[in-house]
Length: 287
Ligand code: BG6
Image (cartoon, rainbow, N blue to C red; front, side, top):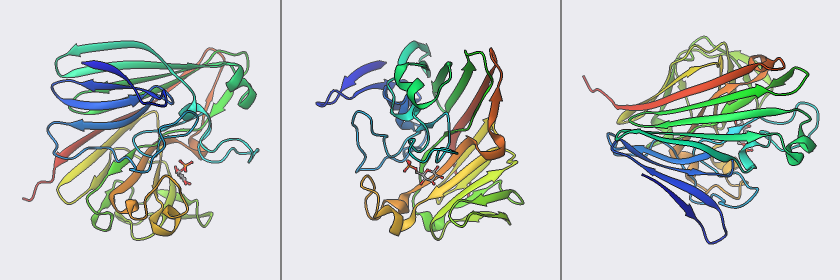
């Protein structure tokens, strides 16, 4: 079942319920902010209790769409961090309750006078979301203009973890990363353990990646991506962020499916590129 809802301030979202899972999706930003498979006792996605749900502000949690640039704009620091797709109104163009277990939604953002003020290209951006026993998000950029353009982007997933100090990220051993905090390059050795602020862009990533938590494994599979970002602001940075609580860093970890840095995608006129993440959980086997 898909139900349209609205907060008192007019903020619109959809609630999706089927036999496998439930989810909530804001039309602003095509921002999925809740998803839980019934096979898992805990939600997959983390959502800040202090998040804004407000016109023009990104939600802190779920899966923000960073597009057409990831992070700071490469040349103009006055432009919004992570682009504009996450704060613009999208259109729901298709909804399909495929069967009792699965719901598919397609949302669209196209160039508009507002987008052209920030990025002078004609485009169509589609987000296809499949809500079932796993969550699949597929972001397709089409170049509708007459000149090539390059996009960097992210499916900026915030995962819920039981305790950040007990979590490991697997699948990044030997990957080159750019440390956004120190602006230096290094090679990851073994699993990644988070014991301080971490903000790293991994290159030449081979999916799948896995977050090993106390009771479950979160698996991140991707196509159309050879980079990934791992981010946790830790306590000091969280305290500077109005939409994070003091200790919320302890139960979240962003492992983002990206097209970042050298993995930015140049798209010719008439061309398209899809960035897809398939996210699932499984109980941790103790054997
Ligand atoms: C991550 C970046 O993807 O997003 C971090 O690597 C950034 O540098 C974080 O701080 C959150 O960004 P924002 O704009 O949502 O506060």
